[in-house]
Length: 359
Image (cartoon, rainbow, N blue to C red):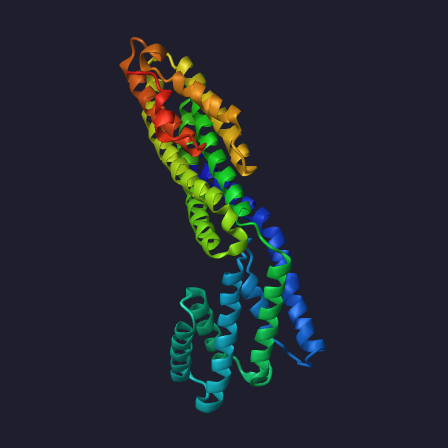
Protein backbone atom coordinates (compact mmCIF):
# COMPACT_ATOMS: atom_id res chain seq x y z
CA UNK A 1 0.00 0.00 0.00
CA UNK A 2 2.79 2.42 0.90
CA UNK A 3 4.57 1.62 -2.37
CA UNK A 4 1.37 2.25 -4.32
CA UNK A 5 0.94 5.62 -2.66
CA UNK A 6 4.51 6.59 -3.42
CA UNK A 7 4.09 5.56 -7.05
CA UNK A 8 0.86 7.57 -7.30
CA UNK A 9 2.54 10.61 -5.74
CA UNK A 10 5.46 10.36 -8.18
CA UNK A 11 3.06 9.91 -11.09
CA UNK A 12 1.07 12.96 -9.99
CA UNK A 13 4.23 15.04 -9.74
CA UNK A 14 5.45 13.70 -13.11
CA UNK A 15 2.16 14.60 -14.78
CA UNK A 16 2.41 18.11 -13.37
CA UNK A 17 5.93 18.45 -14.79
CA UNK A 18 4.69 17.30 -18.19
CA UNK A 19 1.86 19.85 -18.15
CA UNK A 20 4.33 22.65 -17.40
CA UNK A 21 6.75 21.45 -20.08
CA UNK A 22 4.36 20.94 -23.01
CA UNK A 23 4.45 24.48 -24.40
CA UNK A 24 8.18 25.11 -23.77
CA UNK A 25 9.11 21.79 -25.40
CA UNK A 26 6.94 22.50 -28.45
CA UNK A 27 8.42 25.99 -28.80
CA UNK A 28 12.00 24.71 -28.47
CA UNK A 29 11.32 21.90 -30.93
CA UNK A 30 9.93 24.36 -33.47
CA UNK A 31 12.97 26.61 -32.94
CA UNK A 32 15.31 23.65 -33.54
CA UNK A 33 13.46 22.79 -36.74
CA UNK A 34 13.62 26.41 -37.87
CA UNK A 35 17.37 26.55 -37.18
CA UNK A 36 17.92 23.47 -39.34
CA UNK A 37 15.77 24.93 -42.13
CA UNK A 38 17.65 28.24 -42.10
CA UNK A 39 21.04 26.52 -42.17
CA UNK A 40 20.01 24.25 -45.05
CA UNK A 41 17.86 26.57 -47.18
CA UNK A 42 19.58 29.91 -46.56
CA UNK A 43 23.20 28.97 -45.89
CA UNK A 44 23.26 25.87 -48.08
CA UNK A 45 24.71 23.57 -45.41
CA UNK A 46 24.00 19.92 -46.08
CA UNK A 47 24.04 18.59 -42.52
CA UNK A 48 23.78 21.45 -40.01
CA UNK A 49 23.98 19.31 -36.89
CA UNK A 50 24.78 22.16 -34.49
CA UNK A 51 22.01 24.52 -35.59
CA UNK A 52 19.16 22.57 -33.92
CA UNK A 53 21.49 21.50 -31.09
CA UNK A 54 22.27 25.12 -30.22
CA UNK A 55 18.61 26.15 -30.39
CA UNK A 56 17.47 23.26 -28.20
CA UNK A 57 20.27 23.64 -25.63
CA UNK A 58 19.68 27.39 -25.31
CA UNK A 59 15.90 27.17 -24.95
CA UNK A 60 15.57 23.87 -23.10
CA UNK A 61 12.33 22.37 -21.86
CA UNK A 62 11.47 24.69 -18.97
CA UNK A 63 9.71 28.03 -18.84
CA UNK A 64 12.78 29.60 -17.23
CA UNK A 65 13.94 31.42 -20.35
CA UNK A 66 15.54 34.54 -19.03
CA UNK A 67 17.52 36.36 -21.74
CA UNK A 68 20.82 36.08 -19.86
CA UNK A 69 20.42 32.34 -19.34
CA UNK A 70 19.54 31.73 -23.00
CA UNK A 71 22.44 33.93 -24.12
CA UNK A 72 24.86 32.06 -21.84
CA UNK A 73 23.84 28.70 -23.21
CA UNK A 74 23.91 29.86 -26.85
CA UNK A 75 27.30 31.50 -26.38
CA UNK A 76 28.62 28.39 -24.65
CA UNK A 77 27.68 26.23 -27.61
CA UNK A 78 29.21 28.70 -30.09
CA UNK A 79 32.46 29.07 -28.12
CA UNK A 80 32.85 25.31 -27.75
CA UNK A 81 32.19 24.64 -31.40
CA UNK A 82 34.54 27.42 -32.58
CA UNK A 83 37.44 26.34 -30.37
CA UNK A 84 36.85 22.69 -31.18
CA UNK A 85 36.84 23.46 -34.89
CA UNK A 86 40.05 25.47 -34.71
CA UNK A 87 41.94 23.04 -32.51
CA UNK A 88 40.85 19.75 -34.02
CA UNK A 89 42.32 20.78 -37.37
CA UNK A 90 45.66 21.42 -35.67
CA UNK A 91 45.99 18.58 -33.16
CA UNK A 92 43.60 15.98 -34.58
CA UNK A 93 41.35 13.68 -32.55
CA UNK A 94 41.92 11.16 -29.77
CA UNK A 95 41.69 10.85 -25.98
CA UNK A 96 44.52 13.30 -25.32
CA UNK A 97 43.04 15.79 -27.75
CA UNK A 98 39.65 15.56 -25.99
CA UNK A 99 41.29 16.52 -22.70
CA UNK A 100 43.26 19.38 -24.23
CA UNK A 101 40.33 20.85 -26.15
CA UNK A 102 38.02 20.56 -23.13
CA UNK A 103 40.49 22.33 -20.86
CA UNK A 104 41.10 25.16 -23.33
CA UNK A 105 37.40 25.64 -24.08
CA UNK A 106 36.48 25.74 -20.40
CA UNK A 107 39.25 28.21 -19.52
CA UNK A 108 38.38 30.50 -22.43
CA UNK A 109 34.72 30.41 -21.41
CA UNK A 110 35.65 31.32 -17.83
CA UNK A 111 37.66 34.23 -19.18
CA UNK A 112 34.77 35.46 -21.30
CA UNK A 113 32.03 35.25 -18.66
CA UNK A 114 31.43 34.20 -15.05
CA UNK A 115 28.37 32.12 -16.01
CA UNK A 116 28.52 28.43 -15.14
CA UNK A 117 26.19 27.51 -18.00
CA UNK A 118 28.45 29.07 -20.61
CA UNK A 119 31.50 27.15 -19.39
CA UNK A 120 29.63 23.86 -19.16
CA UNK A 121 28.22 24.08 -22.66
CA UNK A 122 31.52 25.27 -24.14
CA UNK A 123 33.21 22.16 -22.76
CA UNK A 124 30.47 19.79 -23.90
CA UNK A 125 30.37 21.11 -27.45
CA UNK A 126 34.15 21.12 -27.72
CA UNK A 127 34.13 17.43 -26.79
CA UNK A 128 31.45 16.75 -29.40
CA UNK A 129 33.51 18.50 -32.09
CA UNK A 130 36.59 16.42 -31.31
CA UNK A 131 34.70 13.16 -31.01
CA UNK A 132 32.32 13.63 -33.95
CA UNK A 133 33.83 13.16 -37.40
CA UNK A 134 33.55 16.25 -39.57
CA UNK A 135 31.69 14.25 -42.22
CA UNK A 136 28.83 13.77 -39.78
CA UNK A 137 28.65 17.35 -38.60
CA UNK A 138 29.40 19.60 -41.52
CA UNK A 139 32.54 21.43 -42.67
CA UNK A 140 35.00 23.16 -40.31
CA UNK A 141 33.86 26.63 -39.20
CA UNK A 142 30.57 25.93 -40.93
CA UNK A 143 29.62 24.12 -37.73
CA UNK A 144 30.31 27.30 -35.79
CA UNK A 145 28.03 29.24 -38.13
CA UNK A 146 25.34 26.61 -37.56
CA UNK A 147 25.73 27.08 -33.81
CA UNK A 148 25.36 30.84 -34.26
CA UNK A 149 22.18 30.30 -36.30
CA UNK A 150 20.65 28.08 -33.62
CA UNK A 151 21.65 30.47 -30.83
CA UNK A 152 20.32 33.46 -32.74
CA UNK A 153 16.96 31.81 -33.29
CA UNK A 154 16.82 30.89 -29.58
CA UNK A 155 17.42 34.52 -28.61
CA UNK A 156 14.80 35.66 -31.12
CA UNK A 157 12.26 33.25 -29.62
CA UNK A 158 13.12 34.55 -26.15
CA UNK A 159 12.60 38.14 -27.26
CA UNK A 160 9.31 37.40 -29.02
CA UNK A 161 8.02 35.06 -26.29
CA UNK A 162 8.71 36.90 -23.01
CA UNK A 163 8.32 34.77 -19.90
CA UNK A 164 6.87 36.06 -16.67
CA UNK A 165 9.23 34.67 -13.97
CA UNK A 166 6.31 34.48 -11.54
CA UNK A 167 4.33 31.98 -13.60
CA UNK A 168 6.35 28.86 -12.87
CA UNK A 169 6.86 29.82 -9.24
CA UNK A 170 3.11 30.25 -8.81
CA UNK A 171 2.44 26.84 -10.36
CA UNK A 172 4.93 25.21 -8.02
CA UNK A 173 3.51 27.13 -5.08
CA UNK A 174 0.03 25.84 -5.85
CA UNK A 175 1.31 22.28 -6.15
CA UNK A 176 3.36 22.51 -2.96
CA UNK A 177 0.55 23.93 -0.85
CA UNK A 178 -1.89 21.40 -2.29
CA UNK A 179 0.49 18.65 -1.16
CA UNK A 180 0.32 20.07 2.38
CA UNK A 181 -3.46 20.24 2.10
CA UNK A 182 -3.66 16.63 0.93
CA UNK A 183 -1.57 15.38 3.85
CA UNK A 184 -3.81 17.22 6.30
CA UNK A 185 -6.93 16.04 4.45
CA UNK A 186 -5.85 12.39 4.73
CA UNK A 187 -4.99 12.87 8.39
CA UNK A 188 -8.33 14.50 9.14
CA UNK A 189 -10.21 11.66 7.47
CA UNK A 190 -8.15 9.11 9.33
CA UNK A 191 -8.85 10.75 12.68
CA UNK A 192 -12.58 11.03 12.04
CA UNK A 193 -12.80 7.42 10.85
CA UNK A 194 -10.26 6.17 13.43
CA UNK A 195 -8.51 4.49 10.51
CA UNK A 196 -4.80 3.76 10.91
CA UNK A 197 -4.33 3.11 7.17
CA UNK A 198 -5.61 6.57 6.27
CA UNK A 199 -3.23 8.16 8.75
CA UNK A 200 -0.38 6.07 7.36
CA UNK A 201 -1.37 7.29 3.88
CA UNK A 202 -0.95 10.86 5.09
CA UNK A 203 2.57 10.13 6.32
CA UNK A 204 3.60 8.39 3.08
CA UNK A 205 2.16 11.21 1.01
CA UNK A 206 3.96 13.79 3.12
CA UNK A 207 7.31 12.10 2.60
CA UNK A 208 6.76 11.70 -1.15
CA UNK A 209 5.86 15.37 -1.63
CA UNK A 210 9.18 16.81 -0.46
CA UNK A 211 10.68 17.13 -3.99
CA UNK A 212 7.84 19.46 -5.01
CA UNK A 213 8.47 21.75 -2.06
CA UNK A 214 12.23 21.69 -2.65
CA UNK A 215 11.71 22.61 -6.31
CA UNK A 216 9.38 25.47 -5.40
CA UNK A 217 12.00 26.93 -3.08
CA UNK A 218 14.83 26.51 -5.61
CA UNK A 219 12.92 27.95 -8.58
CA UNK A 220 11.68 30.89 -6.50
CA UNK A 221 15.24 31.74 -5.45
CA UNK A 222 16.47 31.55 -9.05
CA UNK A 223 13.58 33.69 -10.32
CA UNK A 224 14.20 36.34 -7.68
CA UNK A 225 17.91 36.43 -8.55
CA UNK A 226 17.09 36.83 -12.25
CA UNK A 227 14.62 39.62 -11.53
CA UNK A 228 17.34 41.64 -9.81
CA UNK A 229 19.30 41.94 -13.06
CA UNK A 230 16.44 42.00 -15.57
CA UNK A 231 14.98 45.49 -16.10
CA UNK A 232 11.76 43.97 -17.47
CA UNK A 233 11.14 41.93 -14.34
CA UNK A 234 12.39 44.16 -11.54
CA UNK A 235 8.86 45.19 -10.74
CA UNK A 236 8.17 41.55 -9.81
CA UNK A 237 10.92 41.36 -7.20
CA UNK A 238 8.60 41.96 -4.27
CA UNK A 239 6.18 39.19 -5.21
CA UNK A 240 9.03 36.78 -5.99
CA UNK A 241 10.54 37.56 -2.60
CA UNK A 242 7.19 36.78 -0.97
CA UNK A 243 6.85 33.54 -2.93
CA UNK A 244 10.33 32.44 -1.87
CA UNK A 245 9.47 33.19 1.75
CA UNK A 246 6.18 31.31 1.38
CA UNK A 247 8.13 28.29 0.09
CA UNK A 248 10.22 28.23 3.26
CA UNK A 249 7.14 28.45 5.47
CA UNK A 250 5.21 25.84 3.48
CA UNK A 251 8.16 23.49 3.80
CA UNK A 252 8.13 24.11 7.54
CA UNK A 253 4.39 23.44 7.63
CA UNK A 254 4.88 20.13 5.81
CA UNK A 255 7.62 19.05 8.19
CA UNK A 256 5.44 19.92 11.17
CA UNK A 257 2.52 18.13 9.52
CA UNK A 258 4.59 14.95 9.23
CA UNK A 259 5.47 15.18 12.92
CA UNK A 260 1.78 15.74 13.65
CA UNK A 261 0.82 12.62 11.69
CA UNK A 262 3.36 10.49 13.55
CA UNK A 263 2.09 11.75 16.90
CA UNK A 264 -1.52 11.05 15.90
CA UNK A 265 -1.00 7.39 15.09
CA UNK A 266 -0.76 6.18 18.73
CA UNK A 267 -4.00 8.02 19.52
CA UNK A 268 -5.97 5.71 17.24
CA UNK A 269 -5.45 2.76 19.56
CA UNK A 270 -6.09 4.43 22.90
CA UNK A 271 -9.83 4.99 22.82
CA UNK A 272 -9.46 8.78 22.56
CA UNK A 273 -12.21 11.07 21.34
CA UNK A 274 -10.72 12.44 18.12
CA UNK A 275 -13.81 14.00 16.55
CA UNK A 276 -13.02 17.64 17.38
CA UNK A 277 -9.35 17.21 16.47
CA UNK A 278 -10.26 15.53 13.17
CA UNK A 279 -12.69 18.31 12.26
CA UNK A 280 -10.05 20.94 13.05
CA UNK A 281 -7.47 19.20 10.87
CA UNK A 282 -10.02 18.84 8.05
CA UNK A 283 -10.89 22.55 8.24
CA UNK A 284 -7.22 23.52 8.10
CA UNK A 285 -6.79 21.20 5.10
CA UNK A 286 -9.66 22.92 3.28
CA UNK A 287 -8.22 26.34 4.08
CA UNK A 288 -4.80 25.22 2.82
CA UNK A 289 -6.31 24.00 -0.44
CA UNK A 290 -8.00 27.37 -0.87
CA UNK A 291 -4.66 29.05 -0.10
CA UNK A 292 -2.99 26.94 -2.81
CA UNK A 293 -5.48 28.11 -5.44
CA UNK A 294 -5.14 31.73 -4.33
CA UNK A 295 -1.33 31.74 -4.41
CA UNK A 296 -1.36 29.96 -7.78
CA UNK A 297 -3.53 32.78 -9.10
CA UNK A 298 -1.19 35.47 -7.82
CA UNK A 299 -3.23 36.71 -4.87
CA UNK A 300 -4.19 35.69 -1.35
CA UNK A 301 -7.73 36.94 -0.63
CA UNK A 302 -8.70 38.03 2.84
CA UNK A 303 -11.14 35.11 3.09
CA UNK A 304 -8.25 32.61 3.14
CA UNK A 305 -6.50 34.43 5.95
CA UNK A 306 -9.76 34.78 7.85
CA UNK A 307 -10.36 31.05 7.57
CA UNK A 308 -6.88 30.26 8.87
CA UNK A 309 -7.32 32.83 11.66
CA UNK A 310 -10.52 31.08 12.69
CA UNK A 311 -8.70 27.74 12.70
CA UNK A 312 -5.92 29.18 14.84
CA UNK A 313 -8.47 30.41 17.38
CA UNK A 314 -9.75 26.83 17.78
CA UNK A 315 -6.35 25.40 18.73
CA UNK A 316 -6.99 25.51 22.45
CA UNK A 317 -5.83 22.20 23.94
CA UNK A 318 -8.12 22.46 26.97
CA UNK A 319 -11.18 23.23 24.84
CA UNK A 320 -10.60 20.40 22.35
CA UNK A 321 -9.62 17.75 24.91
CA UNK A 322 -10.33 18.93 28.48
CA UNK A 323 -9.35 15.65 30.15
CA UNK A 324 -7.00 14.07 27.61
CA UNK A 325 -3.43 15.29 27.79
CA UNK A 326 -2.42 12.98 24.92
CA UNK A 327 -4.73 14.81 22.51
CA UNK A 328 -3.72 18.14 24.04
CA UNK A 329 -0.11 17.46 23.05
CA UNK A 330 -1.19 16.88 19.45
CA UNK A 331 -3.19 20.12 19.43
CA UNK A 332 -0.03 21.98 20.43
CA UNK A 333 1.65 20.62 17.30
CA UNK A 334 -1.36 21.70 15.26
CA UNK A 335 -0.80 25.27 16.42
CA UNK A 336 2.63 25.27 14.74
CA UNK A 337 1.16 24.03 11.45
CA UNK A 338 -1.51 26.74 11.43
CA UNK A 339 1.01 29.50 12.22
CA UNK A 340 3.27 28.29 9.40
CA UNK A 341 0.36 28.37 6.96
CA UNK A 342 -0.68 31.85 8.08
CA UNK A 343 2.85 33.08 7.47
CA UNK A 344 2.82 31.36 4.05
CA UNK A 345 -0.33 33.38 3.36
CA UNK A 346 1.62 36.57 4.02
CA UNK A 347 0.55 37.20 7.62
CA UNK A 348 3.38 38.64 9.78
CA UNK A 349 4.63 36.20 12.45
CA UNK A 350 3.45 38.30 15.38
CA UNK A 351 -0.04 38.64 13.94
CA UNK A 352 -0.19 34.93 13.09
CA UNK A 353 0.65 33.95 16.67
CA UNK A 354 -1.70 36.54 18.12
CA UNK A 355 -4.71 34.47 17.02
CA UNK A 356 -3.62 31.46 19.05
CA UNK A 357 -5.50 30.97 22.33
CA UNK A 358 -3.41 31.62 25.41
CA UNK A 359 -2.11 28.53 27.18
